[in-house]
Image (cartoon, rainbow, N blue to C red; front, top):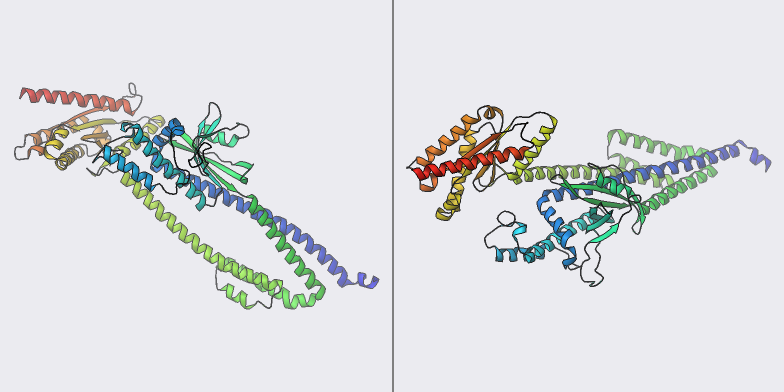
Length: 518
């Protein structure tokens, strides 16, 4: 017994065994925490991406969403919505049918606004909108394989949160067939510190709320939603990590145990056999991995597979590496394809944004584009002195033209006024606000020659209105008024707009007086 324990092979084996065990333990710990760190970062990216995706969807229809939110907060306890609906199409069709019956030939949002509708029609519209957004949040949650998504409307004065859109439906206690709305809770500001910080702070905040609740161990991320400069709620997304933590731990322990068993068995058989039949194969495998890391050649998987001999641990490792190379190659192809799809989606979003700001009648930018320019201009006013003016041009008698000759002729008259405005103020952006009204953001050379540009427009209108060779609806008349920003008198762009509007109305009065004299 003494000779065996004193032998170099035995001592080397003991040292080798201790070293192996220590190495395996350290490696397992590093692997575990490394994988956990990677997974947690991926989870954080996933819930951030989902929150941003939902925010962009809402902002694409911000006006309707704001109306929907305000109606919800005022009437959620008055509306009955089925619990088990699985699409919003029927609700939308119901709203469209009732709307067409009340307002035949008119379009919602353009000719008829929400506040103009009857309470019954408003409720039908709200049911359609709630089903649409609830399904959107549910589908987003399922697509990202998250346990929970929701939209919160805070009551900050009492630290209450209303779950306006709840990714997990709740049945009404008085009628289980109906959906429970207006779920409201007191969220203690100390316990829900991250949530309230996201609400009270400017912009999006870093950090996650860690929960141990009925959903398990979760991270929650909150994205503030602002519409028109007003913060109206929080988009909440949660990811569950406890199950994956256990899976990573089990996989790490299994890998460590397998490697340890392999080393012990190989050590007991013969060190020479280890070197000749196994260490050399491991070296080749390491060389193959290193070559793959440099060259990314997926054909290395085939070379590695050809070196597999039997079903020993090294063979299993070689097979796993070969499979990993194939999976990494497929994963990289998926990443490239996903990146291409995201780029295409981004291009489509940009195109849709451009379409949403283009007026279909005149081809120039519309009221939405003008409001964006106003926000930009007011931001610049806060940063440094600016010089600009506002001009308003309005087509006279548009209603009479539409009723007498038809809307096509009315649109022709609108386009004719548009051409005169754009040709007169050709150094300034022009926007169609709707009807026969145009707004000019007077800049550049037009600002220095505003009187000349206005005179040029009025001369053009006068020539057209007196041209007897034109049809009656082609002999248009329009009034123009403008005002220049005065930093000593004007606080914002709206002040300048109001002065321009007053000037335009005075011009209309003078034109009527001149017509009566003639």
